[in-house]
Image (cartoon, rainbow, N blue to C red; front, side, top):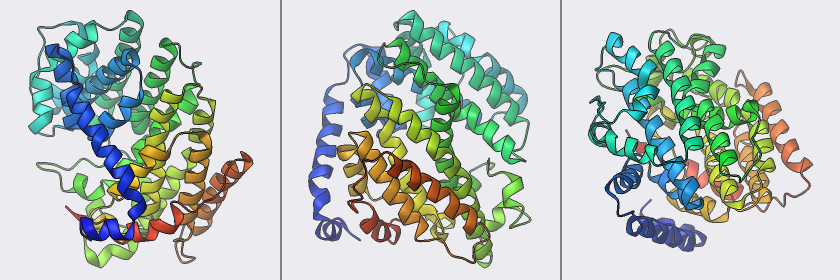
Length: 394
């Protein structure tokens, strides 16, 4: 469907899309003058446009800390993801990465495109890091240390069990949740959240990405790196790459639904974490990606297109989520409606249908227990049209 067709079918999304476009334009005009901060914010837009938008919810001091935190972890991720770097070279770099944050003479070139630029000019990120408050620096350094060590473990280890899967996701995303909670606390905006709730915030987002990105990851050159746990996928195929072939699509979708069902277990913790937030800017920063994640899972569930291309929420609906996620009531509404959308796609013949329904009912119960949802149908009535039109060829 072209842009005009989308506008005609969803006119309520025109204004949010215009607001989003204007916000993106403002970001470009607000790039700091100092070279190192200009690089940091420009690079943030290049490696994650969505994060660059969401981070604007935060005040200047915390925004700078979170920007640097994100870029440092993205650099770590670039080292981990570069399959052209030999394991014996990569592992010690991951393990010692946190120590190099203070060494402006250190460099390591890897990655491609914008990620290579990030690594080649990492000194500018380090310079920004060194200007942060010492408490911010210590929080970021600690997470970089733990993440690098965890990544090094999984460079040499396959994700075999669901426990391995949770452990890997903890290292690459749960620790991000712990780090952000610490930064919010250091900024004086929030109480220090529990590690378990913070971890779930990261795991829910990471598992959503791992599910959505199956085809991109399996086709990665020169070597694929996959994190679907063997304990799950081996119930449906002999090899993980078998899922991308049409003759296996029935089993592919069953495995996909199993993976989505696994991710849903983190939702109640995420709702609890967000309900405890006090600062409006921090709340929006945390809530918008979580609503996007449950929307993405609702689209991916029982959707064979995950194995043909990229499934994602329509841009107009994304704009609405950003504009209209302002209170915990908005979050409860979104999670109720989008989980109900997922529920409507469950088929009795699916091997995990009973467990999926149970997980969805737990989410809906958590939302209704708040006593604040209105179930306006804002997302539910539109999700099927999104579901039928979001395939982007890989």
